[in-house]
View: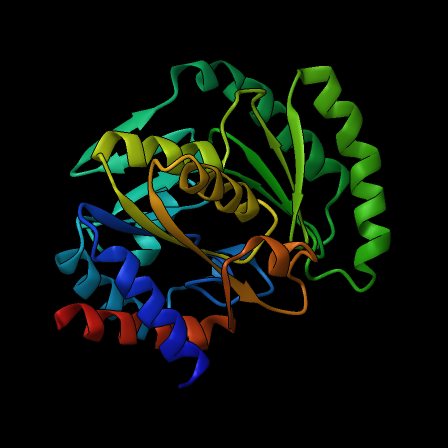
Length: 267
């Protein structure tokens, strides 16, 4: 039995407990990592598989650091639930919800965006304002480690000055409102709202570990069955193999997994 077949069968067995759902990160999981965040696009075969799964399961959700509007435009499926900015906003069935507490930080993030654009005008640094949070990408830098040090020297004082949280991911540094939200709390909220009894989660980056840990906690407490699937890459966090319940190699294998899972759910 192939690795993909094994993971798909494990996922199918868990998702047979209803109501159940599939949740996934976007960048590095459903979309290949690209030099610029704006170039990211979902793999067509993955979009097709998600469309099928949305009809087979009780919920299919994207949980991402991107804004809801951004990821909805890139995925293009209205049957899905979109949870953006690490849980600060949510879109479902045409209704867009935003954490009201986060809105107070929008002017601060806008001011920081302008300041960073002036200080880091090189094309190697991409400043992305996502309304409720801010990402600074440096994937195109010739020396990423050196640029990361420069960015942290600038961003850490700004985060303290404006009362923001600083987090790090794959060649990206983020500033977020100091609100207790992450992909783990977003996943737990979705499970509670929908009354889900079983969940499969896919992710590849450091922020996805929050969702994997939360799912493991819910499973240990007997509140939901769950399977966390880590997407391996050269840039994946070293903790991923320890925290994930299963691993697949890259976006291509995610596509193969989703296609096989859909066929298994068909019976």
